[in-house]
Image (cartoon, rainbow, N blue to C red; front, top):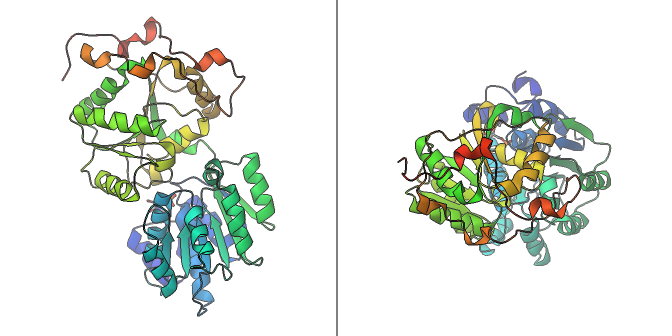
Amino acid sequence: MSFESLGLTAELLRAVNDQGYAQPTPIQIRAIPVVLAGRDLLAAAQTGTGKTAGFALPLLQHLQKKPLRSHAPRVLVLTPTRELAAQVGESVQSYGKYLPFSTAVIFGGVNINPQIDKLRRGADIVVATPGRLLDHAQQKTIDLSRVEILVLDEADRMLDMGFIRDIRRILALLPKQRQNLLFSATFSEDIRKLASGLLHNPETIDVAPRNSTAERVSQQVYLCDKGIKRALLSWLIGSGNWQQVLVFTRTKHGANRLCTQLQRDGIEAAAIHGNKSQGARTRALADFKQGRVRALVATDIAARGLDIDQLPHVVNYELPNVPEDYVHRIGRTARAGHSGEATSLVSPDERAFLKDIERLLKQELPRATAQGFKPNPADLKPEADDRRPRHYHAPRHGHGQKSSRHSRPGSYGHQHRSASQHHTARSR
Ligand code: AMP
């Protein structure tokens, strides 16, 4: 199967060729003809499958085939995060570089005035996060009454982030007659409800069985005490000579703290999460992509959809309490056919999360031991909050909610001690 045989125009084929894509990915093969035919689409696809080109190429072709001199946007793409909006906007621009269409990217956390100027000058395609789009709608700086195609990208994450009311408000501003494309990594009851109210006789595509990413990524678990995690992470980065690693923490505060600690260990690190200004987030991502920052420490929401070419290492410094998030996280590596490595540092209080993940993946993740890891005893003081019982939310996909399960860090027995033995000398 080639891009030519999908019936794309010469301008789009040229742009795809410039990107160096040799052949379409499975989602592109399935989605492009459906979108070109004007049908609604419900697609189960994660970031990393090539889904952006799967909707961007045919919607650009739709604009090209039906030229219309309108000042108002004809395509609206909604995304959950600013980073994803920026990335999708960039992709649309590069796929449409030989076409005369203009794309506006609209998100919060930055000055609204340049966005207003851009919209006033005219944008055929708007890629937006819901909140800032509604600000524009309220200020009447955007006219959504001419939208012909609506794309909801990462719809499951939009619902997770509580955007459902904003989405409904936006839907009310769109013309009834339009084409709808919904992309989601998972299909919860809420997504099905949203889809059934939104899509008309949709074609359903499921190219990415949930754990296909998981199969391409080599995964390993270090069972270790919580107080040892930071030293172990620094050792893994140093001894493995990892040059680019995305590290997930559960909280913004945890991301900041780990970032500072890694810097103290001599590892260039930056944190990216919702409390950082847009400028700081963009800068951190650029530094990471260009190799100036070796470890990017992120929360799930900030990292959602980040497109980093050939990211070799992902670390779960803490496991997510929703098992599907594990699959999203490790999907940051092994993109578009590359292989990658996902490492999880799992403390005793996270064991139930590990079980949930293994149940979802239908496999036991390989346990690893850190041969040669000899942390300095000074590094092993428990952090202040390790001494308190922690109150996690019960996993949404949990299997019973025993309160004792997540409440107190315990300790592992002999067989897993190798990563947590206290040695006196440092290995490096
Ligand atoms: P996406 O899932 O849209 O975020 O795309 C993931 C990555 O795959 C991006 O870096 C794209 O540039 C890349 N990509 C998309 N389509 C193809 C293709 N047909 N061949 C190779 N790489 C692709």
